[in-house]
Amino acid sequence: MVAISKERWSALSLAEQLGNLGSEVGRAAKWQNKDEKSFWGAVERAMSLFDLIQMDARWKRRRAELDRARETFADAVLGGSEYKSSLADLEKYFMLFAMATQSKARA
Image 1: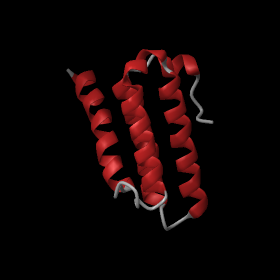
Image 2: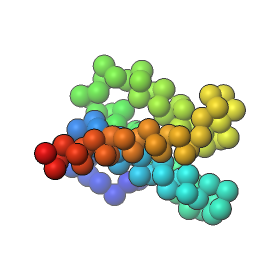
Image 3: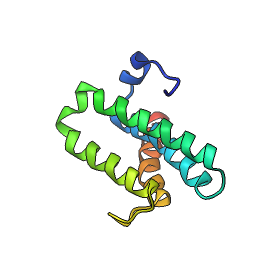
Image 4: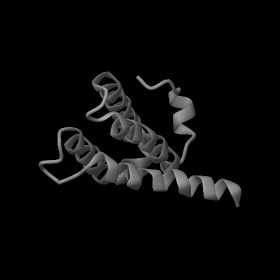
C-alpha cells in the first residue's frame, strides 16, 4: 500500500492525485526491462493509487474514464498488445497533471 493516509489523499484534487500517480508510472517506465523488483514495486504502488482514486466519491462521475486509464496502464505493463500503450506515453500524460498543479500553486 502507498504510504499516504486516506485523509491526506482525499484532500488532494483530481489533478494532484493523477500527478502523484504519474510519479509511479514514471518509476515503472524507468525500471521496465532493467530491474524486475523495482518495476513490479512501482506497478503495485501505481495500482494502489488507482484504487484510492477510484474509491474517492468525488470522482464517481469520472469512473469510466478512470477505469479506462487503469486498463490502459495495465496494458502497458503487460506489453501494450491491446491498446498499443506504453509506460513512457502514459508517464507523459499523467505528468501533465503534476505540471498543471505546480503551475497553479505558483500563480
